[in-house]
Length: 47
Image (cartoon, rainbow, N blue to C red; front, side):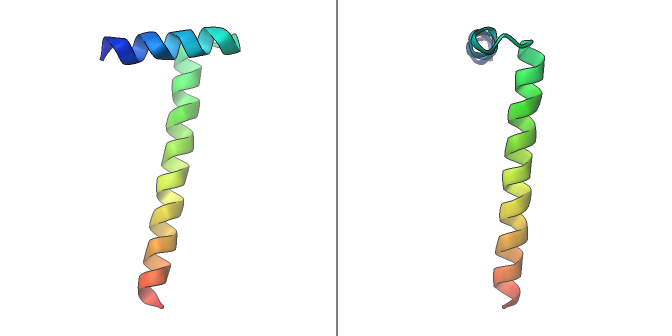
């Protein structure tokens, strides 16, 4: 959505980085969280 991109551009401007880079950082963080959560939940199910 355009509003999400606009908000991302504002945040990136405050951090003085390109918005595409900020988007990649956020995606990377979320993927790591989800991957970590999947590993923890699957190990708990095996216990």
